[in-house]
Image 1 (cartoon, rainbow, N blue to C red):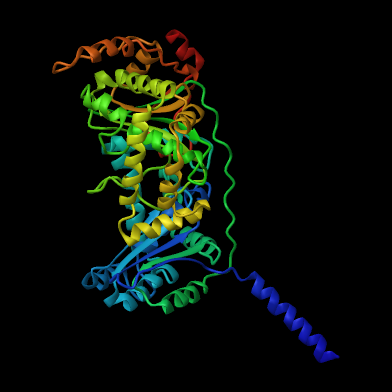
Image 2: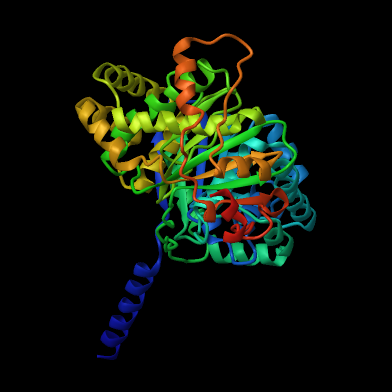
Length: 513
């Protein structure tokens, strides 16, 4: 009787342990003919998991792993070891997830995996690595974004304003958050977040099946922990054009604008909006209306694009977006690359003018057919490599939908122009948007814009009569700026703490009515 009771107790304990142990999630693309192997190890934590007052700790911890040492090797030794293999390790900290990416030829797979897994499972957390990575992150915020990269400064200022008091509302770090973060904080964050429930293994290429089992066992030695998503509030309502004028020395004026969207890739309407957005402003192509009207017809700047979800990448020899940048709450945005300061007011008006027409008229049947064909074919180029296919597969699993590239073709086959035009009217709102403008004369620009002064444009070369006639309307187009929610933000306040700048007091804007 005693042995029976003991057996029951042991069985209960064993079953409890089995239930409690969180399995490691794995996504695979086996391709035995590929000599290259890609690892994408996702930590289901991002800037939304930063500790209050330590904004940037998630990214800093990630850089300490990917650009640091192991228990056995210093950072310089890690770099020297990988060099003959032509292998590399990178990290991409995002809002929702953090992705560690490794590439290696299969001739060096065993040795590389040992090193790669050691970086993640046995990080060195050396004081020199901590100082170097922290200094690099601070330099990016204080010198790159604030100093020289006006295009990305405008994008980040727009996002910070749109997601104010929201987990997405930082540029991945703040100056004071980083400065207050210690090496002990990083070690504690690693211990808290790098757990079995948050690790997601991705692997693609010509690897042996036994490697996946080994990875699951190795990463299964991390502390037990459940993944619980951070609750996301609805973004604040936008009333009119709410403009942040970022004051800094700038030769041109960079402009970003947009508003939250209630749909993501899991929703059917996303694919109708995808065709619409490609027609409006496909990234780094001359297909888009914005590119053709603002740059092509008027020579305002280098490029004008639009997006219906977070877009990073599109540089360094490719126009394609980065993978593994998912958000549970997405947004529509328009990016106007820097214009001459005297044309900044006109450029905003011209973009709103085109958006108004876009919403009112939609696409013609001919435009729809051409754009649908383009998107169907162009999207296949996004996943040319195993690495990118793996990234898209993992993103699809994040959203809980079938493989993204396949779903694009499937949805677009049955799509009608009426579906696209209905989606435009339902989701795009040119009247109510957040706007960020990086300007050398922010105060003067704000005064002219909120007073709705005319903004005539002068061309260096002749333009058509059609454009000149359109310009007469654009020059005086009412913008509906929300004076009480528009402000001048000194660049030094951006990225300093959580909530930069102060909303202009009513008495400061009365004179602009």
